[in-house]
Length: 72
Image 1: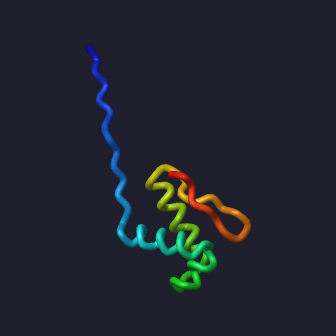
Image 2: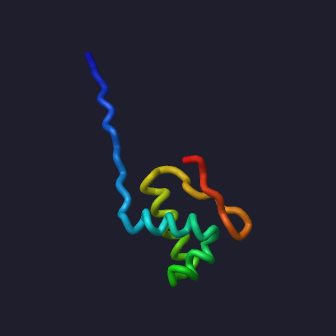
């Protein structure tokens, strides 16, 4: 008998990434978040891509100049 054991993969985000995600979501746009945090919008974009890669899901949908949170 062959039994397949599925291993639960747990991805942990750094607390700084969680705080950053909260700040971006609260700001409503990459530009506004970048100004509040003191970084560039492209840095914000790279951080979101890193978070989405770690979670293996999209967390934000880009819209003209802003974004909205995904259901995930």
